Image 1 (cartoon, rainbow, N blue to C red):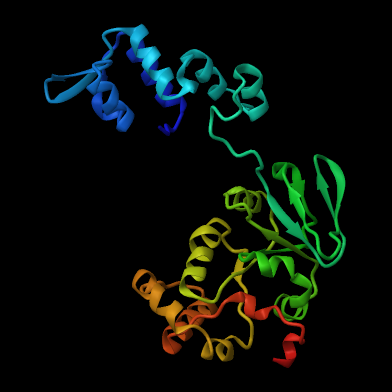
Image 2: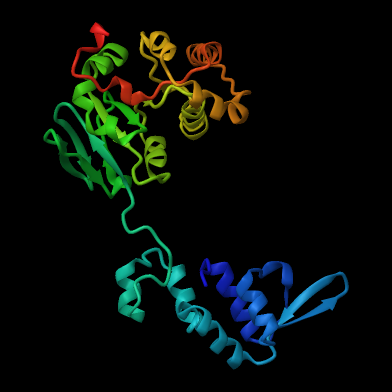
Length: 294
């Protein structure tokens, strides 16, 4: 039975073990109902509230350990949760189980580039220059910095991120000749956004040309990067939309039909999508032929 182990939960369980009453509203789940049905904890009305109590602390602890072995030693798991570095190696060393506490083993994000970009990682020079067919994963993103003249280009779809060289004409035509660092929030997390908030660089978002893609930019990037985030809109997007997907548009319409922005170019794109009743995937820009020849 899966339980979301948090410091707050452990504090409540320790209170119950130690004979204290806690509000029933603070402890819910199928496993709680199971403990109630077995009499391990009891429920009682106190005024307008229902309260929970464990009449036998030892029986309560035994029952918890049967539900989830990470709850066998409440003080120990609480101590692990309180430390910043409750990584899997620490958990395995202490308990033999590296998965007691749910956590991400690989924080960070992917980076890619056309040309070498001299960056810094952990206060040391770090050159981002992946060979074609490869990319770099930055784990210590809090210690990763880039030159201020570099434009960060966030790419939503992995195929576009892998094949940046086949879209080079598009990027140079739409963004300019500034050095470009391509980033991908894969695996999905907030690490990339937090890193972007730490640096002053211009950010350009390259995603699908549909209502959902625009919403991602507005809610997950633009609002957090005021004055320096833009959405990449190719010159030929109207032609592309004319042969785009009507089904995608219909699928998204109900949820995003009220989507609006005060960014004129992006509002015009929203208007085009509604006028043509079509959407266009960014993978369509992965081409062997030059972008200008489309």
